[in-house]
Length: 372
Image (cartoon, rainbow, N blue to C red; front, side, top):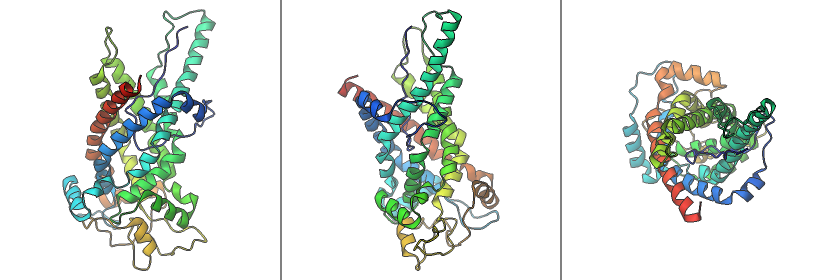
């Protein structure tokens, strides 16, 4: 029976890092995968890096727009800055390099992202294929050509599993990236990591971990589902998908997946932006942290680590931090209304297409340069 090779789309190169598979799904080891697919890993990393660099300015802008505007618990009537105003103020006060803050953390994890995405997504679909083949044998039916084509439901499940798999690395990577993006004080990723570990230990790197899983799992599921569905819709009998069809499929998948989970992303960002109370026994100051990082003179370590936002945000008031996902949702809504959960969606959607375009172009170029 002819087997169908299952591959991961080249466009899926967001900042999330995939690593382990859960739910008891059997997978091939990462070492075996890399040994047999080194060229794929190299090409995916280079194409993914290109996409991250191109999308960085809009990603930073998205994070700035998602930040809490003031600390009041009641609805604010202060007009909010537009995306363009936020961008111009940021560049004017912090320089053009501010558009690339937090870029090192996702670049560090990109090889793991692509390698384990291939493993997790492909392994889950292979389990479906094995069951499909067993069913054919039991029915004594070769099913025509015998080519296995996963259903879109199976594609969604495989993507969902790949999203869950990324928790161990996606949570700390997102945390470090966001803390760099919303800070006016220049800090490198390694410095942020070391200071988080010194303040809160390994636990500190998983601030906002649960909401990261809640965001990533359905996001990846929707991405793969739309990507595969668009490919099948655009394919013709005469030929397989060409470049523009794959580009359109990847871009559409990125837009739809981001739109479907964007309110969750806002909550995740806010939970990871805030300064958490120091762990018990920590030498850090025990001052009451703000909902959004607001360093004080008595806490220079916080200022180095978290910095401040541009003057467009009222961050002078200190309030208790969010205590849970539910608390963040309720208090964000009370202070800023339902629109708060869609603030920054424009830059996120605009980012999807150029990131996918550059990623696809670079991936195809590397395919030719290194040999297909």
